[in-house]
Length: 544
Ligand code: F6P
Image (cartoon, rainbow, N blue to C red):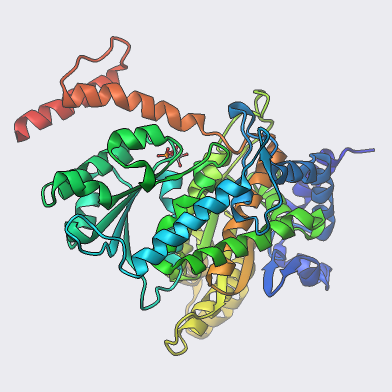
């Protein structure tokens, strides 16, 4: 008898030869069999290159790979981040009840509640004009300084939720390029600006450089002894924050057991609470908790995170796709592809398993995307007629959160039309009739058909949400977190470390010293890097 992996490989071989549209003709109940519902969400994966039978094999594979066991271990706070000996307990941050959750024998829930209460106080005081700066004026605008996981999540959420009339202005500064900070400061008044410096380690070069420049900007305008009022730190390294000059009372904790890219639910999300109000932040947590409950309690075949994770694994590992595209049809989700890039590629862009053995096959495909409908006027040409076939994920909030006429209908219609176009394409015989009627003949007709023909037969999943509010957004982000975890289990890798990022960070240090202080390069510096550094030095000398 064949093993499940052999059967999966056989199914993939067979399905590669099929036209997707024929799968619908062969199975009249394909759509309901390949759609999942969760409340008023609908996830339609009937346009994927997959059949219900192949999906059943994948579910068997998930069970054989112990996916339910690993999901339970994540929620229980087991040390599943093996290379760092830590749990990955972002789900604890959105737990709604106070059931104890132990890490090294200590219940983490009271610490979480205490931090949430401080976040609520800070955001309420800001909204009431009661947080006072060095000159006695209320602090009423925020610059959030952080990078990677200390930036992408809160930035996405601040942007995604419609700003109410009382929303506080928040800018995000991540890049060490001074342009980023200087643009954020351009229209700000030092007397009324609060900086939130978010860094789990408080050693990240970009964040510290921006925080130092921010302090310089404040000190030039305010009594230097009072600029501390203008800083809040969010970090697991309280000592480094204190050394930077942030008083202990102004430091909110991060914990070892939450990874940076999973941390928006912690005090890293303070900017969300300040901008939109703590109630909105709490609603985000509630939405994520609802998705957690679904993922924790639902059998694999009906579990959104497991099924989407399986489809991701199938596309990458069984069908061999090296890319994956996410297209949110919502301007508010413009930052979602960037957030998902860090979430999925920093989590699963690895080549060895948890125990250090080479992974048997590919891991995370490259992920990119852009909002619809803008993307339609950029890379969709490539999707419809290019030589690569890349599975697309459409994310479509159906109801508008504003009242600008019928534009929302146009937006949603375009999303659905694009998924249809990828499936059905545009056939040569139809084109031949049309063009011949217009008088085209011979070689000109053949060339016109070839240029216009769209092969179709390209896979996609469509996720329909009722609307984009804090609750649904929380659930959506939690779904993607869990799906990413499921994919890591299927490939056997640790989704919660990121040793690859460390290399670039450590190599930057001697190059900074070489450029800033003219220090000599080590003999082992490779010739290309050495030549680039020499050229930069020369350019700096000539522009001095
Ligand atoms: O990009 C690498 C990384 O280590 C991420 O994992 C993390 O989110 C980011 O840097 C920022 O780190 P920190 O919060 O410690 O400044």
